[in-house]
Length: 57
Image (cartoon, rainbow, N blue to C red):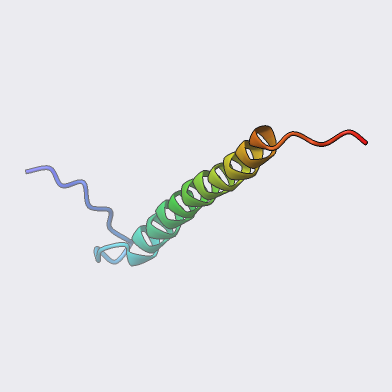
């Protein structure tokens, strides 16, 4: 049976590798969430300015 688990030199589960993978996934997730939030805020302000044209004096 082939296992996809990564082991260290002492034949223990390589915890450092999996912790780094978790950090990487967390960074990617937060980057995606922040991008969506920024896009939502930008679209909100864009819609406000489009709906209310500037008055010319």
